[in-house]
Image 1 (tube, one colour):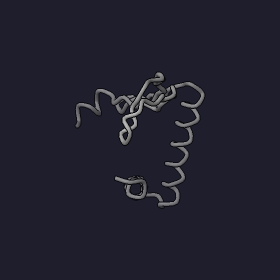
Image 2 (cartoon, one colour):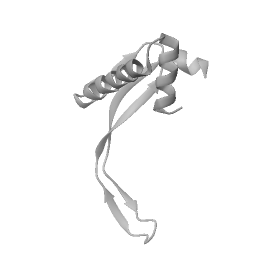
Image 3 (cartoon, one colour):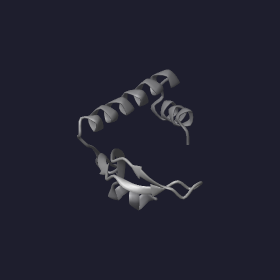
Length: 89
């Protein structure tokens, strides 16, 4: 499912326009992004938790040359499914 399909489904289920559903989805994405940037986490009971995880620096290999390269440390977004979501899948 892509964003357009999700917006259409939200609009249908909530009986609102696609424009309103798109605005609501954009607002949700913005709120989650802002919270994660601030180092927090977002927990939706029954669905799951969005959090930030730190990935350590490591050594990798260039697949074309086999040469060793350094991969910098970085922060990555993470999602852990809740019990109810896991049970439904």
